[in-house]
Image (cartoon, rainbow, N blue to C red; front, top):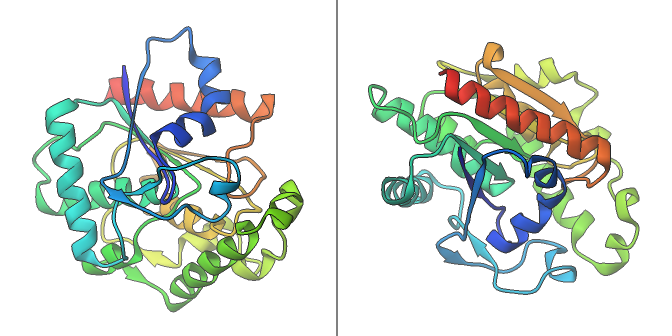
Length: 261
């Protein structure tokens, strides 16, 4: 079985390989090939990344417009045509934006063709609100405000060595980003004319500034085909045994569902 791996903005395939090493170590006895690839654009490092990892750094696209998303989708389609097929895609942060946009654009433009991958594992990332708006989704003003605020909060809480030295304690003051809403209430901030129909896994942390975005993404996927997991941390993949085991189990579930579908 093969998994396409899409890193976050301002990181790289090598960095994403390192970030996922703990839970992938629980899967070494499985017949799984992880295909980590670099984005097509050179990028500045994501906030705090250069404190732990050296260059180069990449992104899948620059900007948030629909044209940038379409260009990235076309690039991804070409890569998959040459190197696929894939049973699943595993994505982090901006990789989630690309992967969810690819599924939505595919469903809108070529619904009679197989999707670019059979299941999706989204980690600490949300959808492109610009793509959703173009595709007929109703995105509330509250969801847009949370998206802007969460991006700013992530930048502030990960940009310096003094903050990073605090570890998990740097993820503070996030209650204002959710307004005290439950996950289901957050999901209802975006109204979907249709949903991503493949099996999906949604892994996010309740201390992550981008937590609302991760919940929003889960809301545009089929409830009967999704699994959600709150690892309790920030914009990261915790390496504890309990978290690693849980994520490994979810990866196996996604692959099993991809074969069933």
